[in-house]
Image 1 (cartoon, rainbow, N blue to C red):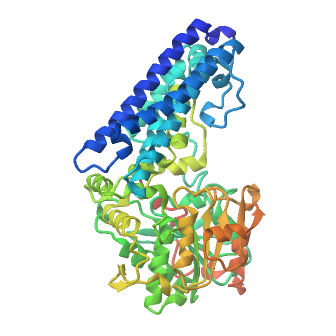
Image 2 (cartoon, one colour; image 1 turned 90 degrees about the horizontal axis):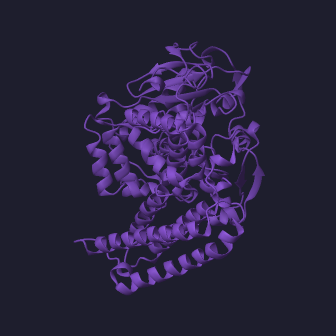
Image 3 (cartoon, rainbow, N blue to C red; image 1 turned 180 degrees about the vertical axis):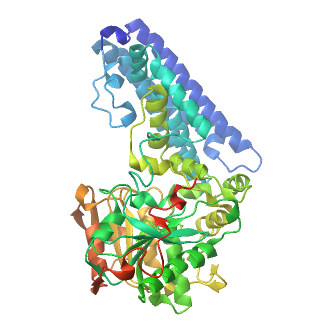
Amino acid sequence: MSDAAMPTMPSLEDMQRWTWVIGRIQQMLLEHGLEAMKAAADAPGAPAFPGFGDPSGIARAQNDFWADSMALWQKFMTAGAAAGGAAEPAVKDRRFAAPQWAENPLFDMIRQSYMLIADHMLRGVDAIEGVDAAQREKIRFATRGYIDAMSPSNFALTNPQVIEKTLETRGENLVRGLEHMLRDIGKGQLTHTDPDAFEVGRNIAVTPGKVVKETPLYQLIHYAPTTTELFAVPLIIFPPWINRFYILDLNPEKSFIRWAVAQGLSVFVVSWKSADASMKEVSWDDYIVNGQIDAIDTVRALLDVPAVHAIGYCVAGTTLAATLALLAARGEADKVASATFFTAQVDFTRAGELNLFVDDEQLKLVESLSADGYLDGRYMAATFNLLRGRDLIWSYVVNNYLMGQDYAPFDLLHWNGDTTNLPAKWHKAYLTDLYRDNRLVQPGAVQVAGTPIDLRKVATPSYVQAGREDHIAPAESVWKIMDHFAGPVRFVLAGSGHIAGVVNPPSAGKYQYWTNEAAVGSLADFIAGASETKGSWWPDWIAWIAARDGDKVSAKGARVPGKGRLKAIEDAPGRYVKTR
């Protein structure tokens, strides 16, 4: 593009003027933040903030801030303006990775001033006295959210790329961006990807199979075998009901379901119904007894086998743990030959930032949004987006609203935006009994269908997978399964997070995983003695399954969807996954 499309290099006089403006803005922001914290401290019933209620504490914070500010200004008034640009190395923060942020002294000053303010605000949270750890985390989360929202990259007049784009397109980018924003406001949800690029059953969730059972709670999908022989013990997968099941069947290259079928497993998947008013009274008992146990018994009867392998992903893994405990209490533990847990938690003492959403105010909000007996899935989507606001909110505000860029087709983000409604009664109980009160790991504190359950009675061989960078189910929280189950447990730590750590096919050659064959008592000890293996952990899992199921049967009769006692109702992926 031409040189005229970008503002010319500011003069020293301009730099002095803008330095004063930015300094004044910094002072206003700092004073506003300090006054807000002081007001919160003075409010009746508010937690103590001694560091901010004490004038000397405010003075120390201001002195530290101004000392750093003066150093920054001095740098720009001498070296920065004279040299015509900053000499810092490339910025690692993706928001400021474009060269314009460093090459133009004005925008470099804006960037570094913002980073200075952000650093002092977060340090201020750590310096607060008189609050417990949980309250400090709430303050840190809110502060970080405010800092991310106020980034100069999020505003047209302080983002050099947006200014360039606006001059280049004569404002067309802002018109297109406004169209995107108004469309999102209309549907009440942020768009991450081209909404017309994917269609469930056409180019996503396309592994061949049949729906062989339908209940008011779920559809059971049986996938067509692709090998002549199959493991005798079938596999049933329970995905989380807070999302659509096809995260495990995005496309043929990424699909865990298709891959498991290719390994010679008879694969069944539960597709949960998105909640509506008819599910007002649905509870945890329903998801365990009328959901997981009913599906397990259905597969056992269909294939005439004594047991199944079961997988539970995220919240469905939490429920699978309760299912195993109930079966153990009933003397029916042998119905499940092995259990696999994808990023699942049973002990919520280290459950991460989601614990910030289970206080009384949040629970009242959930209740107020559930007047019809179910919680709109867009609320949960917004909650998960908040956990990664910089990546899942503000980057899209910049790219799609300010830059006016078209949405790129991305199957994972299509799934992420394909929200599922939740039964309100059960969801509130889940947040209260498990996240807030951590009752599942208290022996006998939770009952299912009138039977007290105890995780210490679970002796089912288990495979526990955690993601090293998981922000929804942190690895240290997933590890705690090891402290409660009685049976043999294999723990595997996978690279990446809650989704990419699970959906990582061997063909991709991405990430890595860690194993440790020694008996260790903590995640730290596990990591200290772990062996790293490049690539996907899926081959390790199938080897673990094969060690427990060496017998094979022919892929015929009831092993073919619709050929047994349960006739095909419709083709996979079924209508439940398409219901909005």
